[in-house]
Length: 295
Image (cartoon, rainbow, N blue to C red; front, side, top):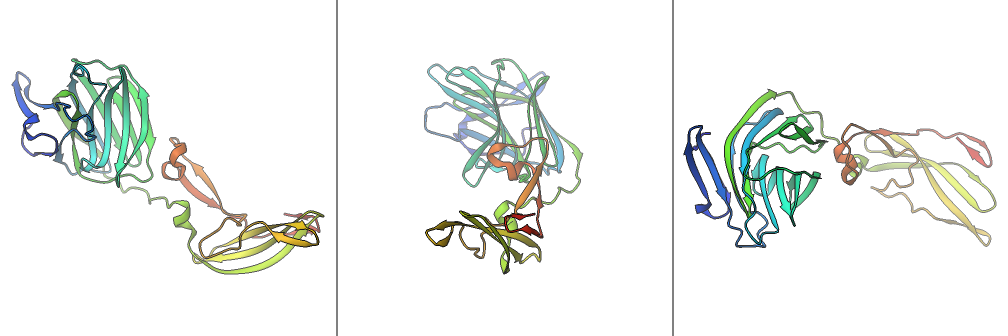
């Protein structure tokens, strides 16, 4: 692999070297791990104009963790800016257990998109394939699929690289293969982003029994759409007491129609709206059939 174009963004400047061999030049990263609290370790990056669809192909050898180390890792970075922003495919040993992970880091927060126990080998060349196809990211180690995710908040940056923490690694080969450069689908807005502002609310019919009452209404929002609202009251003594809060400029908790249909193949419970495509469902009318029933 070529030695030009790489820049070190974290770690000891003397910890990056190049080794000549029959197969060409190889990059060697060696983080001593003397600072047990360091979360970043050693990071090197190179700029590469990344299309919306590409595959990273890397071959590397991870060293066995040094004596006394309980947490060491080697990372392949992509769609990165620096050590703090981008994706990482990580090989990690923690307390004697080996893991493969796909991480997303942005704005100081790290999210584990995939995190599985995976028994890879030290001191043996490992082939890594990461395919990024629009919003879909698939990671493989050798012939084994580590995981596939759908990230509707796909990061789009133009640096790739490697990192080592509390261990050493030799990068034997590295390649970026373009698959396509089709436009990404529009970013799905989160629930609160999609709400907009309330512009009008008109009361409607109500239904009740001896203990409960529901008052329906119609809310109109800044996006010109309307939704049915439902406010619940309970009888205390001889008065109805409202249980749900009144509509304000941003709250839609009363809206019967504020429902979303989420679809996709790789949803994550921790971030349903970010990992799945969302389509809002609405109820726009209510019909009272008798004093106790509305549809």
